[in-house]
Length: 500
Ligand code: TXA
Ligand code: MG
Image (spheres, rainbow, N blue to C red):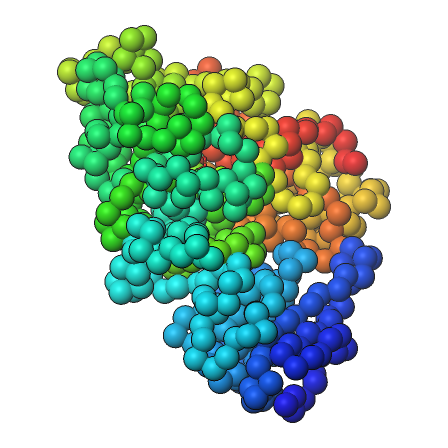
């Protein structure tokens, strides 16, 4: 029985289902959104508009989700119907003992007392980060809840860098489901997460010299945002190494990640929990936006991903005595060099960057680290890096005549380099007004996802970051490199010298 139809149009109704069609205009295109909830015929639905405000505040940390209405349904408790502002998928979040996200219709056979988990539908489920909930998630990762109709064991969890999409690293089948859920190509190897350095040595088959360096680096930077690549032990499935013979290991510092790895009792393979090529997630809501239609549990933790960009990836080679930085993150090249020099047993190692730069363009990582495609971390709106010269010219000219396209543009800035565009563009944010790489890294992915939400935006302008260290002939290799790398990749490597 429907007491109130607040929605614009009822699209479909039969004995077991209601569906509503919500229209939303975005970029001039009218899109249809379908809200579907499986409701058994005897189910009482009451629209609790009065509690919508309350649900909205409960859901307020899901910045990209807007509550449309709240209903109470026996067997589910209160359910908040929410609409994602970042994707074309409408989601339904239920709040009973935990939150459920549905991207498809419940099976019509669902009856009072049945949980959505029995319905056979694929959907993400948000779980709290309490000890009992993590113990349950650990059991799921071990395969304890696997059935033939619900084979997934995936759990997405927060780390200090970004959210990961985890599975048992020792199971090829479970790792295969990571690739399927993300639509990720199989030539992109997975990082394996361990609780402690002592758990790592069974997964590497490195020579003694490499092991010396690995021990030094793990002792200095673990737990933390450093991933170390070395030859893999035979127990590591080739799907994890992408056939490279090398495995990347890291021990995350976030307590929820550590508790989950311990609860699972197995090492966890986990790439960033975004759909392949999209912006990495730093909030549970980002994971739901990308993977809400997958059978994955998502551990909800506030303010988890403080670093904000993925770990530094470094390969250790004992034969050449070279440590190669394959991806820039919070652990700087210089810090690794210093750590290695302090330890005489691992002495003689040189830390090099595979990501050399010329004229501001990042080169190299494609050749040395599988999976580091130039287009990566890309929002669903076209991004351009505005060259430093163009930004300087714009500062003087844009006041006189602002190009019309600026009215459809979002500007993401760093240190006010593009601030002249602010009065003329659709929306503007500065990653760090005071040029603090740490501050910029902590909000870069959230800001890139925000740019997708801006109504009417059809392009995003990003600043070109020239590294002072590079200009002075020095190479710091820290977070500023990481920020520049992510911005360059968001723009698929495209730098423009005039606005287009
Ligand atoms: O901070 C992080 O590292 C996050 C969190 C979840 O831990 N994980 C992450 O994973 O960023 P992912 O899959 O999005 O990026 C892993 C990258 C690969 O694309 C590849 O470039 C490199 O790490 N990598 C992994 N295994 C490798 C290997 N065996 N050899 C060389 N590079 C490898
Ligand atoms: Mg990734």
